[in-house]
Length: 284
Image (cartoon, rainbow, N blue to C red; front, side, top):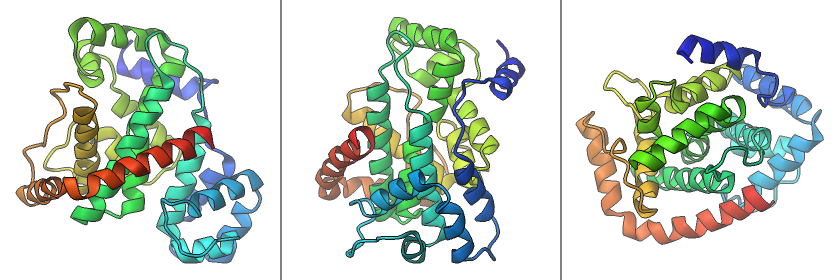
C-alpha cells in the first residue's frame, strides 16, 4: 500500500477515532488572540464530560497549583490559553484512543506506559533546559507515537507485518517501517493532528521526532521529545539505532547534553511522577 492509498484510507475510515466537537472548536478558537475567557468558558461548559476531566487534570500534580480549581473560568485564568489548549488536547486524545489490543504482539498498556514515560521525561528535560514550556513538552511527549494507534485501528495487517519485522530483525518500530517502505507512524500521526486542527508545533513534532533536520523551525520541541524517547528506550533496555542525539544546532545539543549531565538530580522525581501519571491516565 503506497502513501496515497494510506492517506485515502485514513480520510475515509469510519472507525478512526475523532476528537470531540468541543475540542476541535476550542483549538480553532485559540488561533484567535482576541478570543475572550468568557467565550472559551461558554464553549467548554457545553461538554460536561470534558469539564470534569479538565478540572481533574488541572488539579493534579502535573500542574502543581496550590489551591483547588473549582471551575473553568478560574482554570483558564490561571493556566493561560496555551496550557488550556494542551490540557484539552491531552484529555481528548487519550479518550479517543482507548482501544483494545487487536494485533498479536502489540500491548496497548505498554504503548501508553511508554508514551507517559516520554511525556514525563520531556517535561523534566524542558524544565531543566528551558527549550520549551513544560506542559507543552508533556503533551507533545504523550502524543508523539499516536500514529501507531491509527495504524493499529485502520491497518492491522500492516501493523502485524511491522511487529513481525521487529521480532525477526531485532530493530526498532521506525526502522521496521523503513524496511517495509511504508508510511511511518510519525507521518500518519502528523496527518491526523493536522486534520484535527491541532497546533502546528505539535504536528511538526509528531512528523519529525525521528528525523530532525537543521531546517526544521521547531527543532527545540523536536529535540526535547526525541531525547526523552532516547532516555526511555535506553532505560527500558531497548536498542534503537535510529534514536540518537542528532548532529544539529550545537547550541541546542549542548543545552540538552548539560541537562543530561544533571539527570541524576531529577530522574528519581521523574520516575515517581511516571507512576502517578500511569495511575491518572490509565486507571482514572
